[in-house]
Image 1 (cartoon, one colour):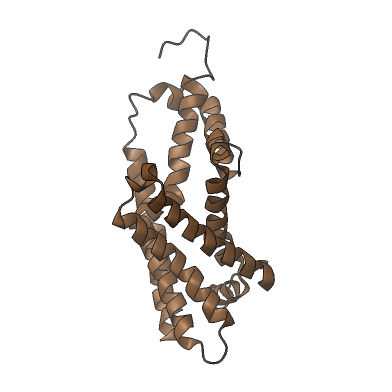
Image 2 (tube, rainbow, N blue to C red):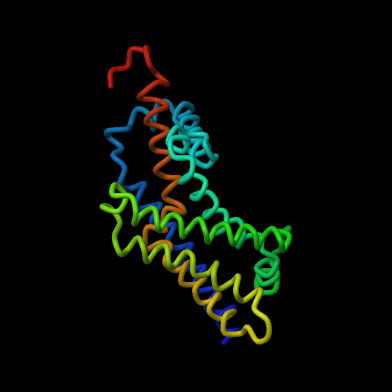
Length: 225
């Protein structure tokens, strides 16, 4: 079972994730109104690129945007959870060794203690975000069962992985659970709200172009929008 999950199933999970994400990006780009935005996209590419990169950078930097600073506690939880979901899996020693065995690639890894701390913080941050969704009326009203399932799918690999790494004796069941939940998470990315893994960059870039060209970059230049 382990060989299958870390072999063919792992390949399939990555393939579905990568191809699916590419499809979501293509679908997003094709859905843009090129007639409405032909000027910023076609004639002011330098300003558009600058605005897109600025928007992405500000939202990837903790407390760089006004929205993050307006809700510092939520922002902290948000970044802690995403660090646990992205940075830890990418640089965890066991994961890098697995990739090295299966694909022949390797890169520097996180110290085990730091990985543990980041994992625990990510789990706690995820629990906080769920409780916030249930507790605040303005967030609860837009929360659906789908959102809660997404949180469960996202946190399950962290919980099972942490238990598998620290449980004494035979931890094969927890290890298999960790691998299965991780692959479910990968497969779910293109088909759920987890697609923001790539669509975040698309939407932030589009908003950055809008603000960089239409709402400031060409102000006073005689262009009528």
